[in-house]
Length: 333
Image (tube, rainbow, N blue to C red; front, side, top):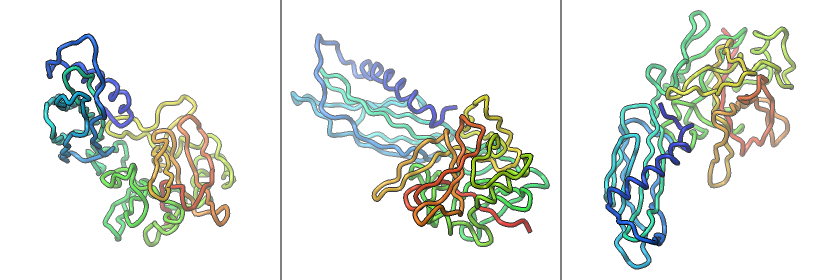
């Protein structure tokens, strides 16, 4: 099953196949030399969407130097659809996959000008949702419903603390992955430290460096120093989960993912917030989680995982511009 990890591969494949198909469908005859069209079809798909959503696009602004009429072909390999029209409507199927859509502008005597976009279909929920493998352990796990929005979280008791097993998804602050609100309930949200410090529901708090050390002490020989990296501890925290059927943490022989603590950390990367945009980076490679501990007035500490290392790292960054995921903690009652 295709996921966002396959987008680049399928874009290249779809584009190559599509140029041939469009050339055949439009019955463009070969000439000894071709010119290039001016411009490319413009349309944008979100990175994530839900089954059944529809998107309508009208292609325009591609021209031929000699004034020849420009036509548009739309094609998606995923749905085996092809249509020659200026306006095209894409309706997403009821399946968890990645749909790649290509539009090619064509005119007699010219090379095709193409644009390709992809969208990954997601579904919230623990049953038949996009995230699979997250199951409750009897005697250790329980559910908590945030009274602010009714969102339910799977939680685990680790030692003397209760932890969220899922990333905080409170929409009162923070930003959804790739600015797609539809995926907020699937992955949780990215918060700056200034947002994270007050984002947890009443009775819960942003996890501290000491909380992370306490959790690690449940599986290590001794409690580690909260201010340093935890050697060979990452696999106890990392969840062997799948997104739309694909493993989220890629296999590396040095990293033994057991999720022994039941905290099920997933690799969503991190974000950088600027004045006019938010940039997301390193999904499937890193997982980053804020702590409540400040380094100074401008920076705070976070814990992070790297898919190629068995260690659990510590870093620090700007309270205002760096955004990470949040796990809420409380003292076990």
